[in-house]
Length: 304
Image (cartoon, rainbow, N blue to C red; front, side):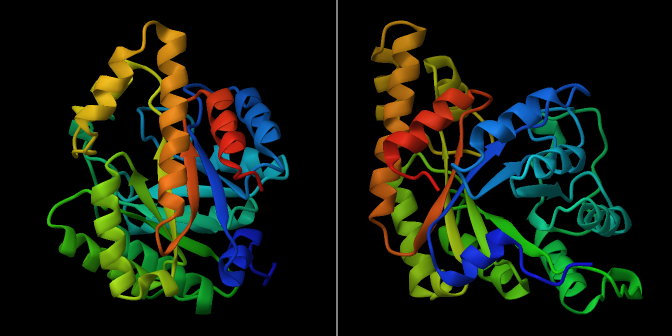
């Protein structure tokens, strides 16, 4: 069993900038797309985040993360509390460690009635804050929920999701503080479109000194068509996509032009966020368009 920090945790501890990209497991059992994606991003990012059934039924996030790790790139395994009770969640973490996956992002997950699989029953046995605490304790001293103790567990690099755009904003800053106090080494925000709102949230975070206790990673998801932008803007929970962004996308004529505008907006967003106090890095996503994600990384000067 290894007792060393993950490379991602070491970067967090050293205070240097962070860059990750988020990918979704394929809707099938073929490992080839994951292996190809890992090879494309190798050397360009510090980690690859693997979402957990965020966009519907798909391959296990744990299996996908293990495939990424096998290609020599550190994965960040996303684990949602929506679908598993505390027994399954801890078992998932121990299984992840056995497969060489020790960066874990804890999230409650979007309610299934909002898109994943509406007829499914949710679990929500524990919330994301409790999961952060459980995994942090598991990796630190082998203790876990239900009074169990494990000699060969961890260490894990535990992170959580932050919601700058949910109301009330002060409450969201308090929830973020609870996640940090529970043991979150990093926070990845929901995708940023409303820069003014995000700046106000960062002010709340820095006033609390949270940027000194955890690494705040801004989520940047490129919207590559007017239809996609409108769909995201209409989604729930509200992502707060400014009307000016929607109009700019709609003004571009044709799919190629809209994709180019979406990439340009993402690059502009990164440059503006980079000027904010307390931001340690970025997580880039482009909903399956790896070429777009790589172009955003290159044009923004973010390559690892």
